[in-house]
Amino acid sequence: MNKILFPLVALFLGSSLVGCTKNFEEYNRDLGGVTRDDLGSLPKGGSQVNKLAQWLIPNQENGYQMTFDMLSPYSGFAGAPSFVSDFAAYSPRIGWNDYPMVDTFTKHLLPDYMSVYGATDGDINHPAMALATITRVAITHYISDIYGPLPYSKVNGANLSVPYDTQEELYKNMLEDLKKASESLMGPAGASAMYADYDEMYGGNLRNWATYARSLILRMSIRISGVAPELAKEYAEWAVANGVIETNALNAKTPSTDNPLAKTNGWNDSRVGADIVEYLLAFNDPRTDAYFTKVRDGKPFGLRSPSSSIKDDAAIISSYSSPNITSSSPIYLLTAAEVAFLKAEGKLLGWNVSDKSAKELYEEGIRLSCEQWGVELPEEYLQNTNKRGGFVDKVLPETSLPDFSSDITVSWDDANGDVEKQKAKIITQKWIALFPYNTVEAWSEWRRTGYPNLLPAVVNSSSGEVQQITQVNGRDTGGMQRLKFVSSEKTQNATNVAAAIQDIGGKDSYGAPLWWAKRN
Image (cartoon, rainbow, N blue to C red; front, side):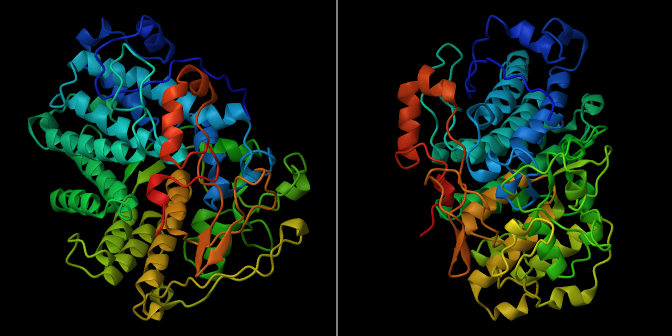
């Protein structure tokens, strides 16, 4: 791991940003941006919008590692060869617990969003403001899914000690902000070509950004479907009616010349997780070779985080797979495959999101994912009824769990019309399609649904805050549910943090389920 400097930056981000900090120009310079004086010769906010896009999933290695990869054991996508007593053991050190909020949300999102807001007077009909709004929501969405309530709509720039939005308020505000930004870019603002040189995702095609925004709306609507069904249905149906990502040509992705996930694996701080490898091997999944490097007898093998570091033991760590990516691999944010699975679950809920059946959308999602990775889908894969069994690791026997099992299969038909089993299949295949970058999304969907079934932690150092993962009626329960509120906020904004804690059940605990994860 590279040395990480924790920024001492005020924690705030609001919908109504009417003031600027006295260090505004300095923040802009420190982040490699342009000042307000520079904006006269450039498209308004172009540089800032470009930088914001780099944090949709962090393209910078420390930001990615601390916000996505260190949390990856919770999704089943990665195992921890090092720092095994922190996140993997449900006991991250305070500075690392705080990092996603302090660095990604406050240091990187805040200054550039404020810059665009100031340059455009907050006019959502200006293309830069619409783009900044989309990126703001996309980033806030995953930071909220890590912590819970956040400051969002109640900050005016003059008062930093403000109430947090509850997650219910936050999701309502974010969905509406995305809708307004999408509508803006479908109007005259979306015809602008001036941002082509600043848009590495869609090359300046702002209509495609509107499609991405609506796809985010669909994702977020599914997230809250169990706790706000009418609101979720309304926004999801609106999003699909106006167009979402349906082909791989429209996949939201950012280019990389120094892929952060490749770097974390190069540091020996991360390896592919046992769960994702075991499912793909059990299913004879055609994406296996595209996803993982081969390490044992010509096959991949995943790591279940052990009790002691193996980072410096070359013989041991070389026996675990890395993601099959390079320094120039793009970072996928939201894909056509994910959208197909979202629509499939929407059909199970009775939403008007497609003329196709849930089965057709489910199988379409699998096909799109295989197409995205350049692999051929054998037709027999869709009829596969193999189940994942026990986990045995002869290199690190302490991590073995030979009694583990899961009843989830690929074949839609063997659910025999059981909607819960169908849902388990949809979520599991979406989980596979989210690999390797969307670890927070995968973790969030696991918390919401209990699927797919994951291995429990080898070491649980949470002092009773986090219950070990167990299966109840085929769904996982327990496991890490969130990170704790940032330590500096507990002293500098104590009253409002205390109120936010009440919103998650009265205790700032790693085991407290978030609003959308509460099950009936």
